[in-house]
Image: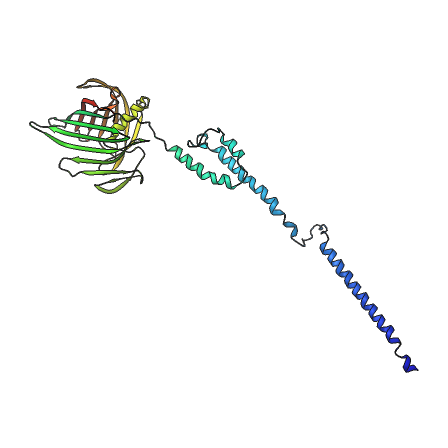
Length: 360
């Protein structure tokens, strides 16, 4: 009988073990639930000095930082516009129908850093372009032929007499010019000099393209003006020279000066200087003409009221003194030209006849 009852306590023990297992499982489930709740619940406030546990709360910072970043760019742009000169703030090429001041335009511009920055190079280019303006207004005189009397005197020598001729022809914004000079001998005349100039009329007045010069007992030389390359080249030299705005040759400079007076007589004031780059057969130099004032000269045409311009000698550049007399009553043509060399030789050409050709 004892052997038969021995197995009865076994079912009770197994039930106890199963209950213990269920209890442990319930505890595990509760612990897991608590961990899940702790992970998903809002973070409690940290105590002072406690290091941050997670960095997720920093994700919203780029949005709050980006908005203030635009403000310095806009302020800097406004400051740049307001400190620029008023004349340069609105380029001449811009239409003025809106009449918007620069300061107002900068305030109405979009508050972005890219748009104002892109407009800065354009504004700078407009300022540079606005600064390149002709120093004088020029109105080329009409076509003409000037007959000249030539007298050359040298120290301790008898004077020499000759004739000169200045031919100037304008048509369709193009021009051709020729200057000749020769000596009268007993039975004949000898041509000493011929200068030809061809080119166009532009924003700075006369714009030579090619100049050829022929002297007695010398080969012909040529000077080429290259506006696209901004240079001047010479057939008698391998050197090139930078081309300045309004540059002239030895012939065209006479009509350029006449054109300045013809465009506006107020541009001729006693003491005023007129600087023009003049190319010769091997080089170019800046001729500085000084307006001396009004003078009356004697010619075969009678007394002529003129404006006298003088180019004094310039050390290191040219030693001769050049004087030109322009006649306002005759389209400002050069009616007398005088060249005084360093050795004392003086060559003077004075008008004897003015033949104006009809416009073509």
